[in-house]
Amino acid sequence: MSGRSGSVWRAPGMRALLAMSVLGFAGYAMLLPTVPLWARSGGADEAGAGLVNAVLMLATVVVQTTVPWALRTIGWRATMISGMLLLGAPSVLFILTDALWGILALSAVRGAGFAVLTVCGASAVAHLVAESHRGRAIGVYGLSIAVPQFFLMPVSAWIAESVGFRVVFALGCLPVLAVPFVVLLGARIHRGDDATAEGGCSADAVGRGGVLLSLAVPALVLLAITAPGGAILSFAPQFGYAALTVVVGLFAFTGVAAFTRWLAGGLADQFGPHRFIPPLLLIGGIGLAVAAWAVAAPDRSPVALVGGMVLTGAAYGALQNLTLVVSFAVVPNRLRDVASTIWNIGFDTGTGLGSLAIGFIAAGTSFTMGLAVTAAFCLVVAIVYALRLVSLRRRARETPPTF
Image 1: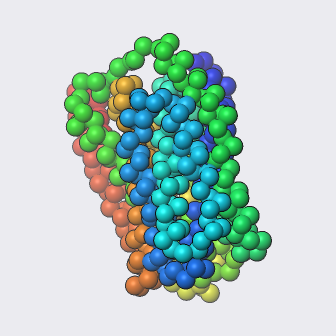
Image 2: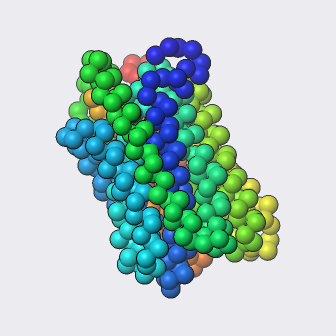
Image 3: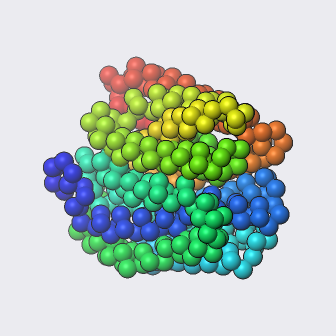
């Protein structure tokens, strides 16, 4: 691929990947905050509502472990088409039931489709774009994920309550429209893999256990920030603030996340990703602490809530990019799909755990306590990562650091 700035937009296959991602994540974004509200309307409590997205993410994580096998066995096109149908088609079926068991069953099916979308989307970046431009390419791919979330997630609950849940469930079928782009993307990846010999990297000399251990570190970082991120996206309408404040806060959260995910790509290509990770975890922890303080008394300060969501969103977006860059850097080309899988497991485990844990904490105590716990977790992981980075840099004169 050309080394010109911005050329990642024109890399063969990238436009099909971006179209697939936009449509897939549009369906995901419409339902993430809305289905828990649908469960509440059917009589579920906070814990039951939190269970909805936890089941979605549990199914996602379980199926993600099988996606590399599916790519090798039935190919990219068949795997991705199945994923888009599983993610999009069940959305309309929510109209038929507001019983918690039915909602959980449909959420599990959608989680299987979301697993395919997330693993294939992230892995496709590594297949389509040269390593020297991978940070920028991940940033562009991140925009295709973040933009639909920015526009749709903050208003989906409002649409459901003001216009009707049926409209939201119909829009949740958007991933089905991605099938033609999936066909084009799959053909391009197959051609590229056939024409390109598998390259190696320093990780070829590392055993599989060592590679998985190296991938676990960025996955832990991702879990630390996606747990509170998933909780904010799931429960912001239940924080006790007026609808306008919630919409503004969610727009701010998703908007700054989109910007920082794109911005981090160029910085990672130029300076490397590691130096930015501990400060961003610290920023995320501070943002969560501010949000917890604001949620403790909803009449206290809407500005504090939005400000806390902005700081958390900045870390949430940038760390998604940086941890994916780190994940691809520590594996050989033949394990790109494994790196994508582990990264996505970290992302979706964090989102699911955030929804589940904070839902149960809120049911027993308050949302303030739930946000405070995740803030502390961010700070602990920041310290651990910084100490590990200092230790590895001491040995950098002899061997390059591996995570």
